[in-house]
Length: 135
Image (tube, rainbow, N blue to C red; front, side, top):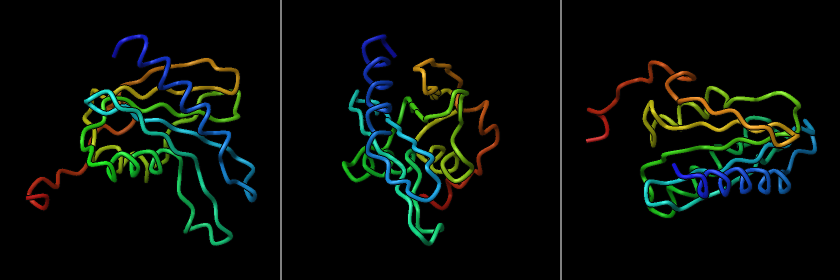
């Protein structure tokens, strides 16, 4: 991924965090995904009094991309108000695995704008192989 797209992805994730609806946890998260045709989709976490009905920022952004017909993600950026790096939760990792591969870049962003990149396979080394069910 070139520097221009990386910077835009980071900024979109930070901007998405500002729209977070997190009155219960006060834990704001924003995410942005880059598709294989260089389109960026963003999302924020949206909470609900019934916690199980909440959605994480990463899944929100991925579902936006899927709704637009995109099926291949090449990078994901995740921003929070934490001073340290946070990684996608297990549910988000599972959803990422549906649209990405092990080499997909995951960009983690601190509250101070510091970034760290990891390959998705470091976060989710053995995703379930359900190719037969997709056919």
